[in-house]
Amino acid sequence: MIITKLKGGLGNQMFQYAAGRSLSLRHKTTLMLDLSYFETQATRDYHLRYLNVIENIVTPAQGSSCTDGPWNRYAGHVRRFATCLRGFRASDSEGGVDRPESIQLYPEPHYHWDAHFPHLSDNVCLEGYWQCEKYFLDIRDVLRREFSVHTPLTGLNRETSEEIQACDSISIHVRRGDYAHDLKTNRMHGLCSIRYYVAAAGLILEQVTDPHFFVFSDDQPWVQENLHLSTPVTYVSHNTAKEAHEDLRLITMCKHHVIANSSFSWWGAWLGEERDTIVVAPQQWLRSTALNCDDVIPQRWHKLAAFD
Image (cartoon, rainbow, N blue to C red; front, side, top):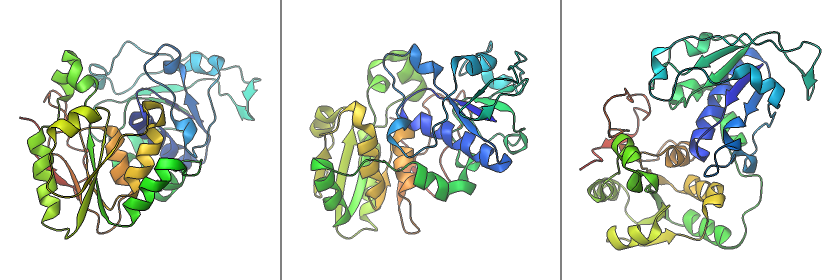
């Protein structure tokens, strides 16, 4: 059994699911989702429920054997191994899955590719972000199926999807929110500058003859006031935060992509990527240089300086 601890927004949850799914398929075992994070986070919601993922939800009893250790998001990378020896009762099961006597808690040791990951056992609890396609590139087709939205397109989303598929569409994602309004978050993540988006659009304009930009953002008023492009632009603003999966689906339909330093638009580009797709991404994933983020952006994507 593989347990993956989910946290953060939709994009982060997708990374955590993808890493766990890959490991579970490698061992031909069950993937369990630990949702305990969302019980105390009013600002975040379990969002994979809108996708065709395999949902085996960890019970409170099961989750107690994969409790948080004395590490955190940024200090925990110094620990490669930790074990959680609180045993499962072998007689208990949930959904037909027998619980083992013990399980290894494996916190992500650092932000870049962890070469030990493929050698983990089939009895492990994953804690981290796992933002690197090397963890799951071998199951790309599986993830494309399971990360599809399980409800049909309707209303404005259907109309927008038809527009996207009828032209040389380019998605642009502008991530602001706490990146802009929380000082600590801004110092770590930073904000992609207008200069970055204009340069990225220019790079695509050199290769696409009749482009139409579709702009997605959590701050559309700011974007419409500050981002000015000389080509046709549609600002996609009808979906709420709880409908992020609808925006993600629309992004994947675009032919080319300009992403923010955001796991959300990373997945929109990755899931919609074809052989001739142009993806432009920030050269530096985090504004802070304290962590090695070299493996977040695939080598085949174009990278531009993003921070002023």
